[in-house]
Amino acid sequence: MTAFVSKALGPIGRLGRKRRRSRLNRMDGFQWVLTILLTLLAVFMLMPIVYIFNHALKPYHELFIYPPNLLVREATLQNFSELFLVAANSTVPISRYLFNSVIITGAAVVLVTVVSALCAYPISKHKFPGHELVFAAILLTLMFAPEVVQIPRYLVVSYLGLMNTYPGHILPLLAMPVGVFLLKQFIDQIPNDLLEAARIDGAGEFTVFLRVVIPVCMPAVATVAILTFQSSWGNIETSSLFMQDDEMKNFPFFLSTLTSNQANLVARQGAAAAAALILFVPSLIIFLLLQGKVIATMAHSGIK
Amino acid sequence: MLNKAGSVAVKAPSGRVGLKKQARRMRAKGLFGRIWQYRLSYLFIAPFMLCFIAFILIPVIAAIGLSFTYFNAIEAPRFIGWQNFQYLLSQDLLFLKHALPNTFVFALIVGPGGYAAAFLLAWLITQLPEKSRRWYALAMYTPSLTAGIAMSIVWLPMLSGDRIGYLNSLLLQLGLIEVPKLWVTDKDYLMNSMIVVTLWSSMGVGFLAMLAGLLGVNKELYEAGKLDGICSRLQEIWHITIPSMKPQMLFGAVMAIVATFKAGAIGVELSGVNPTPEYAGHLIINHIEDYGFIRFEMGYAAAISVFLLILMYASNKLSWSLFGSKEGE
Image 1: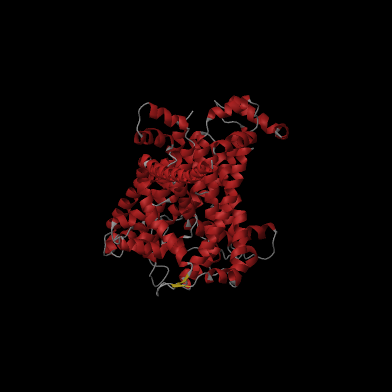
Image 2 (image 1 turned 60 degrees about the vertical axis):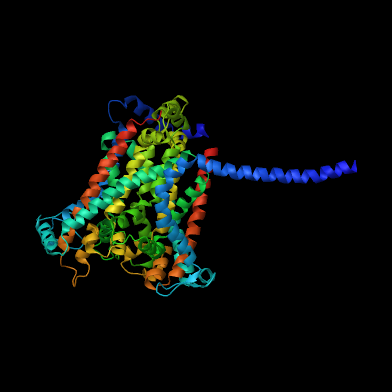
């Protein structure tokens, strides 16, 4: 079987060997072809981002062209001034919505990564009684359609008295089974010997977790942080279901009210386009920062 | 002799009972002892588990309970036993003729396809020089980052049914078709369009996890593999890369299953009407939303989602066993 594969793949194999020889100094043919192909694909995939940036700068007569223009022709900042005008006239200042969003997202990102990692570590490495049951429950609930749990979840939140409070925003986000599942899969890969060695050196469980497990799993932690940021920054659900006071709602909710409840589809579209850009930029920055961390830590990760 | 035997016979059971009792006591003590021994582990999982139980487990159990009731979200639920499930599997023609087969077709193509594409792209990115990797990762992840906007800007104009639509005008110019095709409103094409668009946007969590996993594969293994006679990239992938990132592959598989079975909005977004033309893009999730939020039959909607859960669980088991066998090879 192996011989057959290597015979069938002879040419590619030779290419691979050639690559190895020259890998230290420059890119080889394979990488050049790959770069060109991936760049073409990347340009196609990146179109939405280019569009978001250009759309926010379009004057009204360009906003409604169909099919939409990717690039703006006469760039203007009038959409942003319209957004500020709308914000100045709203009953709750826009800064309050932004403040809520920042507080909620910041707390969610920190707490979710910590709480998920704390949960994933014993499930993977401690084999305590019931760890299989816990993991099975987490996996199974991942598969349940979110639509039908909305009513029971609303009842739980109101029963716990979390309506119109910050915990009402944050606590439902904390229960993110995907994070635990992802981290558990990465912690599975850490050799037990590494943890044993740390314990023999006199480290307690918490020190092992903090000094060995977390640094080695940094790529997974960064991935969970990216996911959490995305889900909490754009989250409208908790604002519309659990918050009745306007002061407690978040920025994406404010954005969604800009264009809904309007008599026509034209009004405030410019402000909405500007707001969409403001909403999107933090996601982009966070993704680039954390993804860079994934790639950087991988280069010098602790496992050998 | 008889007496002796009798006494033995009497004694033995009592002794055995005593032993059993003792063993049971020991075991109970052992279990509690073990739980106490692992108290730190429980402390570690407590914060997550409390939130998980409150906001996920209880609602899910409540929803499973609701699936045995008639519940219209206003009156109190009324218990009706298995009736919801009986109706679902024997009389609900929309479900049996459209939602179920559509979901199967959709999941069978998009699930494995998206999974393979995510792995392939993640692997290709790791073959690039380190500096540019992050930008390509961003590009591939864009559809997940921009969600709805990506749909309205890229795909709706492209698949538009008139001759202005990018795809139609291109094909018309090339002379491949004579009349513009209704890519998203014709029932024959809608499913294909849905599959293409979903594949395009399938670089989600699984992709990120596989990318991180690929970058984490120990470089020394490749050197060792080279000494053992592995000389092509495909062999490298098969013998070294995949076995050493099995946890991430498994994660990717589960997330692919979850994502494809939970997809629903795509058909409505593309065709712009709900329900989709002649139910061509009607998936199980659409069916759940239909009954849950349009007809307000929450009990029946809950029953459908329990059925969906069983379906996902079964395919999950299948992928788990597939990856289990690969280990034995």
